[in-house]
Length: 182
Image 1 (cartoon, one colour):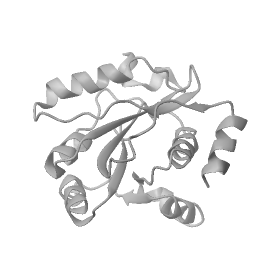
Image 2 (tube, rainbow, N blue to C red):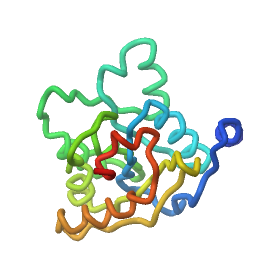
Image 3 (cartoon, rainbow, N blue to C red):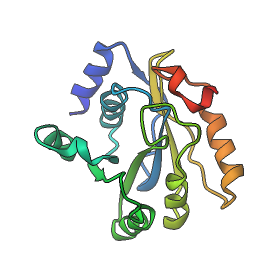
Image 4 (cartoon, rainbow, N blue to C red):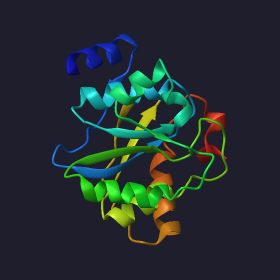
């Protein structure tokens, strides 16, 4: 699978930047900016090419047949966005249940423009006591990779500013949809 994903990335003109440290067994993986359906295949190809086994959250409507087969097979976990259902608590519990869990979360919660990021990724990392890995797709340079691990301090506003500053240097597929460009 690794070679196939590397071939796919090369075929579409992308390359991988820095990779996630293989010793990392648990983390919340921030996926930002998320502005296009193309983010999904490029991110997954990068993760597989790097040997990273990931689970990810996606809206539940994507898990209906036939697309649902692919979503589940690639690590997808459906989320019903119409209800407030203590998702953070459920995700913290999942981290406590598993020896290894790399959970990718699109922090905007949608491909559309939003003014602010959802805070669940942060509260999940704090509650589970795991670091935040910062994954990026830079459409300007066609590079996908990872930044350094970020260890949340518990000061959400301060930490969020630092995390968002990391992402400001990358170009989204649709920059007008990125909250970081506003």
